[in-house]
Image (cartoon, rainbow, N blue to C red):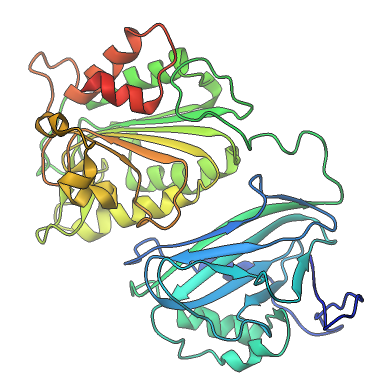
Length: 427
């Protein structure tokens, strides 16, 4: 990428990268990761497909659910890193919650124009609720973009401790090319959430998780949740347009926290792309902390003596979902307290539809807000209970209650069903 800016009325493009100036390889950017942040940040770009050709202009938008100090890092295809924000034109890096920061600012003479080298590149937004102890912001106010040398990279790395929740990050991977082919726009216009024939240009993927038995003897076995997962995966592949090669099943001892993390953080982001649709299903135990502020899902290897270290908490789950930005994601959770995975479901009245007769049914349908309502697009949640409620297996012990009625709704329909109609049928 070449970062250029205009000075007054001059039309000459000037690159701020100084010849011979040492720059850091980009590995440290990946290490700046906080899956248990107390708030959320989201970075987005002006091309929905995340593909940029030579001479395209790149613009990023960053939002945060809390006030903080923003650093926007860019890693090019060669691994070199630059700070795009703060910059010469936007020196103050303090941003207010839910107020989008646009980089470069629309009214500035600073432009980001794509140039060689081409390949996989990344934008990472990092927001700290406190000023960084090791960072001198004055160095970023001298030019439109500031290359990061080894010393600055070390300062960044020291500033963000994985043990503290007062900072958050989010990254967007982009692809830069010398020219844009005719099919690179695929995946921008989709009718996501349909559970009928796949009429989209993007592909469909499904991950189905069911945990009946648990490693910790203190956790009650459920007996039927692995069957829920199998039946839902069959539904996704037979009625929801998911090819069998694009489906993954994790049950019982295969559904460890580490395996689930690899699927969510590595496999799905790598095999899917913006414009695709992803179905995620989970059947098993769910819980909440004693202070009732956090909900969690219980993997196979959960340890009741190590709740914080072995459960899948709502903040972590939400951060993983953010890595699927640009995809349409429908999440179905058949577990106790599962509505709490969406921030708006912390309040029962917000979790349910305005139609009052949803309340006795003890299940939540909401736009997914696990990213703390920070621009999380194209994601929705169907949960078997709200954050304060429990969920059940049917008395026939053949399936869990929500799973049974979700399957029944699709099997009895002769036409495609959106996720809204799906909830109406269950109601």
